Length: 276
Image 1 (cartoon, rainbow, N blue to C red):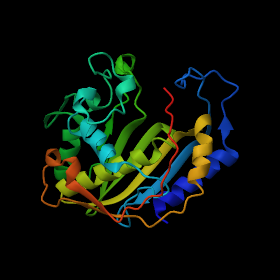
Image 2 (cartoon, one colour):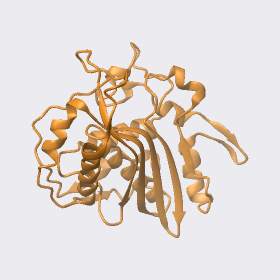
Image 3 (cartoon, rainbow, N blue to C red):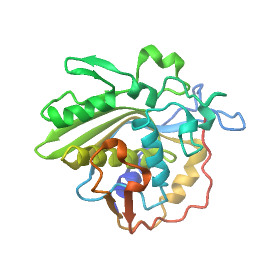
């Protein structure tokens, strides 16, 4: 069993067995038929993934990791907020008629700010500091910009990354205000594990630990039977992850720069509905 499987089982069992339901409250999300999408949740889950030991992808069900990486590159490389730059349909329901999701996600990372060393956007500042100021305790990004929230079609869920170099190792913390455990949990873990590997490689470091902090970790009401089914699956060992070692420029990575060997996830027949 991979560590990712172990943590997913532990998190979901804790939520299902001892979590708090919001059925007594009015909620914003709705199912496609208009019914309110209620959740059962736990507050403040913290998971630690040792990237030196294994790649944290679920085997209890398939995570479409190539598509997850494509979305990551859309946000962190292209710094885009338009779905026409994305090779997937996952953001379609939040886009307007032009394809824009508003001043969200990649848009925020691409805004330039003035520093003593010059003008940088958030991604380029991280890259600069990892090479020139690795002892800094200020290497972070934050896309939860209160000034622009009213112009975002969806408030950022995974909103902040903090990077820390210890010796020759790059560690990272992903802060998330809200987490749909079935649809998005391992998706985000895979993305930010890959991001940590990418940043480490182009900075002459090795990827160390990814810490995932989730404020509101929840399972939607219509997801409960699907999660229960997943928890009965037989997990397998974590696959072997590798990145194209010839890439030394963060912006030269593509979705095809990465490989997973030995990924044999369990089959899940159920279709996962998404609350909007």
